[in-house]
Length: 107
Image (cartoon, rainbow, N blue to C red; front, side, top):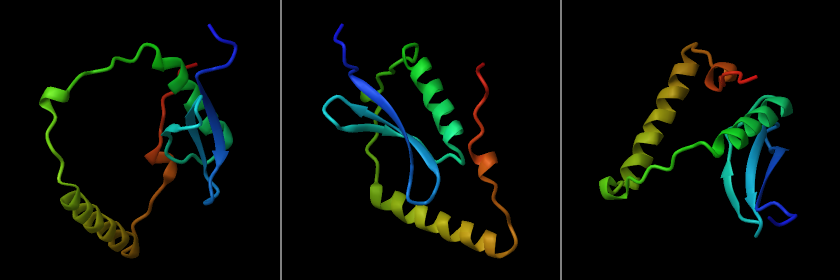
């Protein structure tokens, strides 16, 4: 095994002030990025769980069952969903990021 890692995890602060992790291949290509986290520690812990569990993850082959996706229909649906969310928030709804990203503790 070589002395340098094939891939690395990086935890960083994005332009919005949230924290994310990314996986970068040896050639510098970003191969994955997390959703946002409220703190550096939360992002680092989530990256650790992904790293620790990746070796035991199954890779399912669903190519034969793959169905073409209509991306324009998805964009239209996403735009409608965004409008519904904005309307809901305008009408007094609330959003808590902590509920959106709850990860079970593995320690």
